[in-house]
Each structure stands twice: as structure tokens, then as C-alpha cells.
Amino acid sequence: MMKLIKNIFLILLLAFAFACKEDPIPDPMPETPLDTEKEKEEAPKLTQDINGFIKTAMTDIYLWYRYLPNIDIKYEMDSKAYFDKLLYDEDKWSFITDDVKALESSFEGVETSFGYSLAFGRFSNTGNIFALVEFVYPNTPAAEAGLKRGDIIVKMSGSDITDNNYRDLLYASSLTISLGILGEGGISVDPNSVKMTAEELTLDPVMITEIIEHEGTRVGYLFYAQFISNFNTSLDTAFQFFQNEGITDLILDFRYNPGGGVNAAQYLCSSVAPVNVVNSNSTLVTYQWNDKYQNYWKSNRRTDQIEVDFISNTKVQMGLNKLYILTGGGTASASELSITGLKPYMDVVTVGETTYGKYTGSITLKPEFYYDNESDYAEFENWGLQPIVLRYANSQGITDFKDGFVPDIPAEDDLFSGIPLGNLQDPLVKAAIEDITGSQIVALKKARVKIPYTIFDRGFSKYDANKRELLIDLKDFSFSEK
Image (cartoon, rainbow, N blue to C red):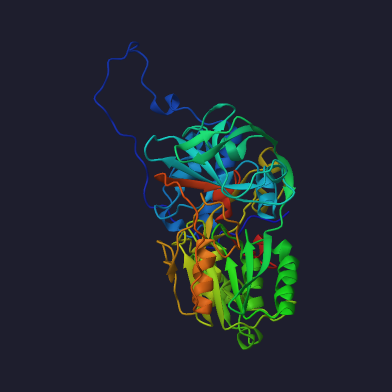
């Protein structure tokens, strides 16, 4: 087991918390002095041990460790609530879990789900909540049930979808849903319900690889759902296909991509960037850790931990000078790193809607990193932290894009239309192809029922927020080194 990090950067706690004194209240037993310390209930030992792990890890590697409040862990009865109390105001990404094994599986594309991605909306005229299917992975319960992009879910187990239960559409082990039928009079409920049972799935994020032809131009289109390095071979297959087909331009669809691992982003960027940039191992992004770790990496000449470079050993090098990336509010983390990292070296044209705004990275911390003996953490070995440990910047120093990246070519995603991803009539694809070819695409004339609504949330599974993490790999590093 890896040992607890040596505390060579001692944190001096200069302030102490004092209990606030109130006006005295008559004591029913005046002969017994009031002992405020004994009245304050201590947390169970296991909870204190978990709290201790949290405090040790956050004090060590958290990006904003200098701003941690001084809280006595003995009296924190809820470890998850204690963790939340530690977070810096700017931090909306760090999280804690009591099932780190399931979390790590999710990061690798293995999780129990129905296999669809949903956008949750609210009708402006009624306030009723509904879900729109954004996309469906093939060979999943949702696909087998016949669900497709643009389907409207309006009922769950025969009841209305509410603010309290709407995420059951992602979390439940089984579902019975009713679809809405869009007509001139509004939305009616299909009497035929759809039943699904969630399954453990291994999901390849390289979902759609197509050639789009327009005005004699052959454009490659790739829908990439998440950055997972286990599926880099799928990227190889896609890029080799594009090369064989002789495409002149490439569209990467990141509109629903929440991010993932930095290694997958490094691989994808190295596969598409100009050859001279890749072969010279130019800088993709740089990292800024907290002062302790930044100084440690520098003093030990660990440039691999403070700089991510292009790599020349990808199987395919597209060698492009221009790239189109489709974006939306779900475009986050590694997706944004790819956009900003590539921009200094090639013409990156973003099409769609403003991205999420995630300029930080995290690592998965487990108790085994901080204890000498397994027996010391056996009762909470499946707990884990995913704290923010760094911010990143591209080679030009661009970082802290809290409000996301505004698209170069605005285009609104039209889920109600049900137009398949990669289709010329998809508004985002249409806008990109028109810019590539300089030729307007005639929109199909189709009667559309306009219903006022707002989208307030979206997701794929219970780990959605977690997938926005930019996952950092501490290459060849043991915590006992430091």
C-alpha cells in the first residue's frame, strides 16, 4: 500500500473556533455545572476516520487548500456534508462518493443504465416536466425498446414527471414510460407504454462515423460521446476510415460530451492536429497545481505532471489545418481542453451553443493512498474523493473560462425535430457544412408545432456531473515519493 504523503509542507492553523456564549438559562439542576463539551455529541469512530481521510487528502492536494475552514472532525456526523463544507466558493466540481469502484467503472465507460441521454424540459404554458431523447447508444435497453433521438417522455409509471422524480429516468433499475405525440393541438400521450430494465453496459463513445457529401465536398463527421482512453482504438478506426475516404474537412460533434480523461483528449488532438505540431511534441496545455505540488514537480523536473504535449505515436495522423467542432451546454472539461488546446495551432471553428465552462482538473483519491496498513481503512475502503487539484491553460495562457466558449457560428440544437445526428438537416451540421462549402442547404419544408419550453437539466446516468471532471493521471507517481 502507498504511504501517507510526508507532511513536508506544514500548514499552520492560526485561528481557533470559540463557542458563542449566550445569556444564561436557568438550570433545572443548579447543583450540576453545565458542561458544554460533554453536551456536544461526537461522531461515531468510523465517521471520524472517514472525516480524517477527507481532511488529510484535501489539506494535501486540493487546489484551494489554503482556504480550507478549520472544522473539528470529531463533531461532523455526516462525512459527505463535512466534505461539502470544505469546498472553496469557486469550486462547483469536487465531489465525494461511498462507491468509488462504481465511479471508476463509469469513467471507463462501464455502468448500469438504459443507454440513452436525455434533456429535461419544462413546458412554459403548463409547467409540466418532460424529457427529450438526445441520443441512444446501440444495443442497449433504450435501443431495444425502440427509443430514438427526439422522442418525448411525458409519463413515468403512469404518473407525471416532477422536480422530485425526473432523474429516476436515469437512476431507476427499471422503468415504464409513456411517450408524447406531437400534434397540432399540442402533445398527447401514446397509450402504448415502453418498458425497460437497466443493464451493466460497456459503452464505446465513438458512436457515429459518417461521410457527408455536399456540393462535391466530402466531409467526415464523428459523434464522440465521452473521452475514454480505453477506446482510443475506436478513434483510430474512425480516423483511418476518414483518410481512406479522402475527406477534405472534419466535423467533431462534442455537443453532449461532458469530458473525461486528459489522456484521451491528448490522443484525439494528436490524431487531428497539423503533423509538424504533433511531431515536434508541441504543448497542448499546461497545469497549475497548488503551490506545494507545483514546486515539487518543478524541483524534481517532472514536466510530465505540469505539461501535456502532443504525441506522435498515434496510429493515424490526419494532419488537418482546420477543424469544425459542434458544441452545446453539455460540452465540458476534456472537450473544452481539446478546443482551447488546438486553437493556437489550427483553425478551430466552433458551431452551436456556448460550452459549459470547465477549466480545472481532478484526480480520484482513495484511502489506500494515505494509510500504511489496509486494516486502517478496511471499513471505508470504497470511499473516494474527486477533488479539483489544478487549473489548465493552453499554450497561449488561456484559462479561467468560467462562462464557457461562445461559438464562432451560433446554431440552436433542435431536439423536437428528431433529425438524426450527422444529418444535413441537423441545424448544427447544416451550419458547419454551409461554412465549409459556402453553399446554402435548403431546409426541408415540414410543418412544425411550436410549443414554448425551457431545458433545465440533461444527463445520461447518475454519474453525469462526475463525468465533467477532467481526469488527471499521476504518471509513475507514488504518494510516498513526496
